[in-house]
Image (cartoon, rainbow, N blue to C red):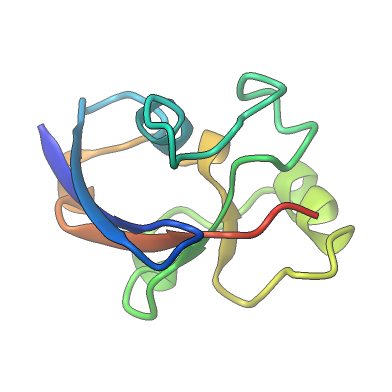
Length: 104
C-alpha cells in the first residue's frame, strides 16, 4: 500500500492508502471529501484536478499533451496541477502529498 497525504477543499488533511497500480483518482474518489471524477478517468472532464505539493511535480511522469491541454482550459491551473486520473501509483510515490483543486 502507498501512503498519501491529501488536503481537502476545507483544509483538512487526510492520510489515505492506495494500491500500487491504481490511479490516484481511484484512491481519491473513494472518499466523500475526494474528487468527483465524473468521466471515470478518461482525461476529459478535469473533475479530478489536484495540486501536487512542492516536492512532487518533478518526481512523477510529466503530463502528456491531452492532460496539459485540458489543464490549460482551467482558470485555477497552477504549475503543480495534475489530473489524478493520469497518475498511476507506483512504490516510489510513497508519501505523495497533494491538495484537491476547487472545481471550475
